[in-house]
Length: 417
Length: 131
Image (cartoon, rainbow over the protein chains, first blue to last red):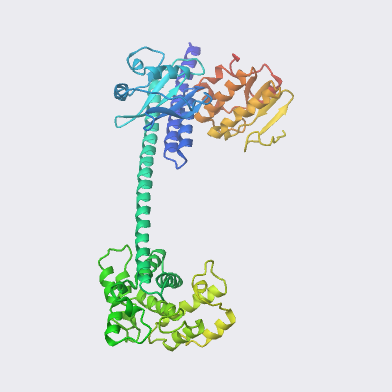
């Protein structure tokens, strides 16, 4: 009597322990599929958990591949290389299987098994005994196939329920992964489109810059140099990448208004008449009018163009603005535009040396040029000469060699801020 | 107890020792991860080198989970496919219960200590092997 009781107790204890073991596996499975580990690893771990729970030696998880139109293995154990195995199912079979939430016993000939058709033979080759459908929102995402238990024991109703719950967990993992993949695909597609658009945009702006410079035989490359100088200077002043990109574009386009000015005026070697001077000086406003019709991704390009001939003492044009009223981009542009004009040949005079140009800057200190812009300009040129920057930009574009000693002497003569 | 390192055989895993024709593996908690599958290769390579018996000693294993069970079944199948003998030892009660739940206790010889398993002592605490 007591022996029978003891045995019954043991069985009860065992089944409680079995329940706890299965419960902790479910908890681990939940943790695994929400972990940030890579998908292949998550699926493999999930398969091992299923196989461990039913003491199976062979198993595989299949996922539907939309391109191939078949269910392909994404994880397997105990089956060697099954990469070439594909389970093909017709649309009818798929729509019927979606309704069938319970795991399918492949050893029986009962209803859903016949739906599998040729796939059933493939599964038989893998020694598969139980097949669980992975379904989310009426979509058949894949299957879990496992062989018979290592112990030879039959699959019970409880086993079926456990496999069903585990399959639901794994279904969600497959579902979120495929959503993520779709999103990634869309993202890459959009990114490529955006990159193309961006390239076209830059090509167009460069074409404009080339058209501007082509009008003036002396200023060839002026727009590109002003663009490069302004970007380096803005970066030295602590602007962020996006803002630097904006002033780089503004540099390329700052003289766009010259497109409307007569070529003979631009290239004239003798002093201009007052009419010609008015014509030439209209280019910032014309440029502003052209550019203000374009919706740029960066702020301030039209205003930078309009005000790049303003002077901090209020004597510039077209708006006669004083220091604080001139947009900072235009103050940068005013300096690098004048600097490039001075250090390159003009129809009316040969180029000035770097020292002569900087003397001009010093003479116009706080009159034409803003000290807040001149200081960082000097500082970045110093860094370039001392090779403290990786990609010097201004110094290699100058038509002379600079040395640190002469440079220091020159800059010592500058007023202190 | 001495432990030997066999370079390149199983990455990261180095807890095993050789005693005559027997190799003893100490799977600690390494077995509870899919990486534990590499122990199958280790068993195979020992049997190919002429070892006849694999003892798996669980005295350093806190608790075996379902992944561990799956890895162990893989090892058992590999060893049996090559006509080797696989024995367990040093099981904590909790691990004995896990093996009992998944039915392994009926299919594997289980010994109290690794020495008993190596010596093939008849005093097995589990059920009789069918191997």
